Image 1 (cartoon, rainbow, N blue to C red):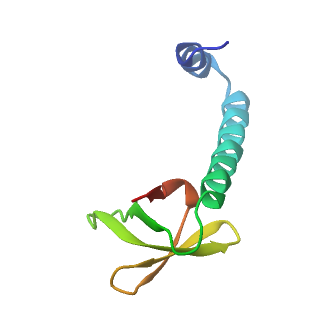
Image 2 (cartoon, rainbow, N blue to C red):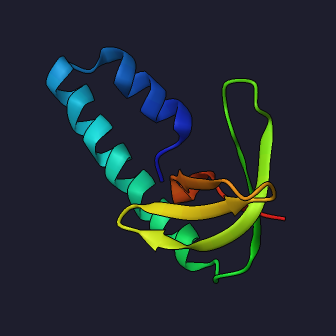
Amino acid sequence: MTSLQDVKSFLLSATKDEVEQVQQIARMRMDQIGMINAVSFQNGDRVKFDGGRGRGFIHGTFQGIARKNALVKDDRGMNWRVSPQLLTAE
């Protein structure tokens, strides 16, 4: 099995094309992880995510999936479209 250190060493010596291929594979895997995470929630489940820009964690209710994004209604009634991999259960 390849270790994280092996991957780091490879990336430090890789060509531009090789790095772009790794980036594409990583992006696809993150999308896959996000969709696996999204189907683990059901409508009405309590979730939280980092709101970014100094907003801290946003707490709300999972509303479903729209294309690639999870729909979350926060505790103040605002609707959010969030990448599913950012969601965690409360």
